[in-house]
Image 1: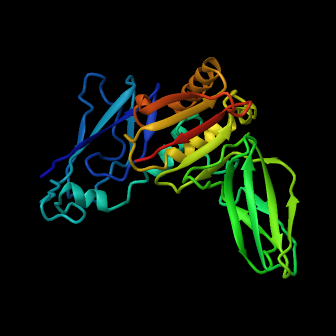
Image 2: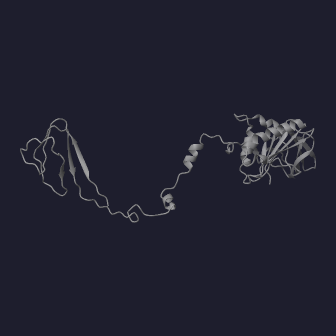
Image 3: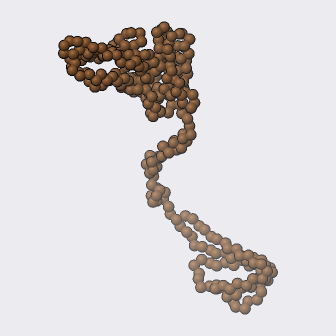
Length: 312
């Protein structure tokens, strides 16, 4: 229950005359004595009382007190509308919190090294070389791909005329993969109906940087010269793409192997350190998961070969 009353103070400057409609003063009343108490009370519930004329002299204020009737407000918080009791979940269910907008707003200006960069497509995938025999009227044929060392890398053969295009994914005959940066060549052998054999030599070529495997076990091959294409911060674009693809592997503890094949130990170690230093801070998980291995071979490609993999 709440009770309230109010006091209205009216300030007068010099002599002020007021006309009221209230009871308690007779017309023609004379000036009030300065020592007389000027406090007047109007009781609650009375109406049509009036002061026809009131003159205040030698005072600068008049106080009128109004009495108000008691105000009773019986409120039960347990049953009042809008005050229903509930648990914290009820409060949360009234509106779904927006967690995305504040996050995007607070991280819009951050340059995270872990951000995926799916627009990078420098590594070839699937077909890395295409051969076009364009031969007719043959009974059988054989296409041999060899490297600069004269070793057979891959062989394609069949009966009848060869297809218009033969795709190669870089896989070799030893269940491995051909090295980018190494010069390759191919020879096409064809036999006609009389049994005569003819050989056709193709132009030499080098494989581009390419990748095999899916998102669960990516393997990427590139030549040392492929690191020349760098992002504005100086990081090779191919290494940014490699880190982005390895970050898609669910197992963040899986070791990342960096294998470097070069003609000298110093060159191999220099390339291994460059790749490791660039990728370690951009990979999810502990930086110690990046492990570098070096190999030296006199017949290695001139710019070396780099393999980056995240194998089980």
